[in-house]
Length: 415
Image (cartoon, rainbow, N blue to C red):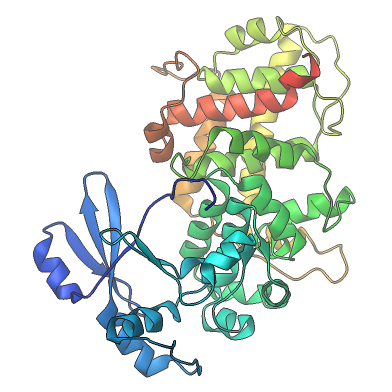
């Protein structure tokens, strides 16, 4: 219907989960509230749920009155009852690959045609039942370019503070789904529009407020342009490692705090790419014959810098980028980001764990250290998406440098 290939399919079966475990050797049951099986197949995980599991949960927890569809036989009843427990109507479709039939009991097909995200049960109840659905709503709308129904939009906005009840691991997972799969710019715009950015990323929200960016603003800026260029390289089946988008946030924070000469940014990105070889980075950067994007207030007017001055500024900028990353993981600093703005919600949320912080820091450390031993620059421009998803230092640095360079020196300025 959307002329797009689904990222994956989840399986639902009449078998009990314990039967699924017996059939597949590489399989485990996960989840407490709504247990499912993770079946490992080659390099992927297939999620398998059971009608019997959802049936037990339905009879125990479900408190909403729905009329049974007319002409509904026992199998239809089981499918219908399961669909009522889905979060959004467009997620409540079932496909029988043998009969080539799509079962839709809750209006999912109509909402897909209308490009609309709406909850199966009343949005206020749905989001209070599971506040993670608020973030899933943002992710789905951003990835598909859909809008919210009026009721869903209202409660996404008014129940947004409830997401703080989620554990930090879940918040990181949801943020990664938004920013690492090719819909980062749209996700950031929706998070801002519905008042979630102040809770999840107060530092970036403060940047938008400072520059007069409104809730429904169609303009762009450096932050959104960086993520727009990231999106051009990614897709739902070609994600990046979370260290990449975290490094982009830190890079932008450092540059917005202290604007730099565009040549400094170019040398910095090239030094990240080649593992910190400053001499090579400067040589390549001085051969740039196209204009930088002058619309970004984070970029200064170009100056005539000699090698030592340029090297000093680049290393200083690398230090500032790592410092910005440290601020993003400091609860006190995060809590103060929006303190100067009236009616801004208080948030000291830090969901970046230490291991991820250290991985992102290494992107900048090679520049500060003046060259990394045994680091081989990537040859060619083709991205190895498997390596990028696993966080290969070479692949992450190559992609980071490419995004930064293409944002500061976009092709369309000279075409």
